[in-house]
Image (cartoon, rainbow, N blue to C red; front, side, top):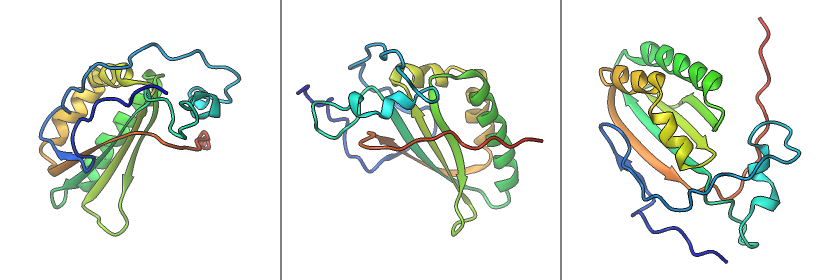
Length: 166
């Protein structure tokens, strides 16, 4: 069984006011080619990708959950900015497996962005994209607080979202 990645601190998340901290470069081998995947990235969640029967998925998959607390009245502008960012990620980032922005029914000033990448290299590539830089810069005037939680993916079922036809 492979040794676990180094402990990067508590798993409760951290507050950030800029770019996420850089994590150590461990286990950055290129991902295995897809084999029989129904959609890009589906093979990452197959039992064949699990480590030595531990039940945990490949440590190369990188995930993040970010909770934004917005300033009063900034919800619509943040949502438009997030929608444009999601669309740009969808069009131009094949190694970004999931990039979704959620509103919170019980907390109208909160938004949650869930991100899942093929590996940390894909995550770092994501951070260098112009649309991500614009999202980071333009949201500053709308966001009161940001809580970032790094994730290890232990188990998952992922299917493509239905396509809306206009």
